[in-house]
Length: 447
Image (cartoon, rainbow, N blue to C red):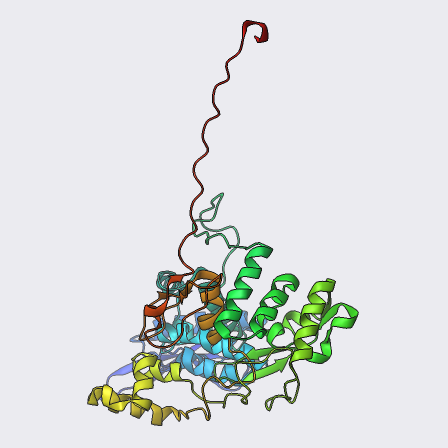
């Protein structure tokens, strides 16, 4: 039953507390403030009215199964987003690739919401954060970040840390347009001749046949990158004119390659034309690689060299990002420290020690498998565009090629650009514009 309880402060001044019966009947309830302290009312009447209102609301919530004891409600209000996420991640039992993607997305959520209580995150703040992200990142990436925020806050609501999921979108809200305002550029799809030219350039850049055969195989079968890298020799059956997709190799940020099922369990057998089966079969007959040390399997395609798997741990890029410098600077600190300023060198060495960075044994070219970033930077992108992408400390620059046999042999090494007689980026000569047909003279009989 609700009532007002008279109390006396230290100075001798009287005040009243609003007391009521809690639905769980475990203890007497009090009307408290945001800090969990009992509210002090100046009169008995105001205290009793507040107690009656609080008691009615508590029993109404209990009927709906949503009653939360005051002490739990106060504790829930003090849990920050970062604290909840830390425990939330420990409860997830997902594939390492999914956990890696979650942590990538959290890097965009924690700076904005990490120190805020979950209960205090407002819609306006989420909208402001989304506008900031759209100005810096691709729209598809921002959707991924917000999707994770929605998932986390939904679990927070289930745990009683928030009343509703403020990241949830209501359907049918907002402006509508016939065409998307943020339409991405149209994807460029080459012809089979274009695929052949890219494959030939990739082979010239790498100096071997693996890249040529792999590019042709990907163009005609549509295999994903992980499926192509993880194609084991036992599932490439040129004699039966088919390739079976059973596994893929997924590369983590640590450099570890996981052997896992294909995406969305898309196991399948891909029919192959005779010439493609002969191409891959001939490649397998010419190359008999040893089983890789990381998985113990023999694969159709191998990385450049015959070395083992990259040792797990922080990468050179991660060291550079943590130190706020380029990868070229980190490389100079490791190999040519005399070229780096003393202050920068000390800062980079400190980050290396904190992260526990370990240099990979053996030449960097030796690897049992392709690396997505390395293959894209030094093989596929230059083959498709004719440009080496920006890679610190160098800016983007054309691939220099000799003016010798078509389509030109890439010139390698430092200062190799000076020895090239041409480049793949030079546009082909445009055909002359069509000329109007000459007027024909006719006779009266032909009119």
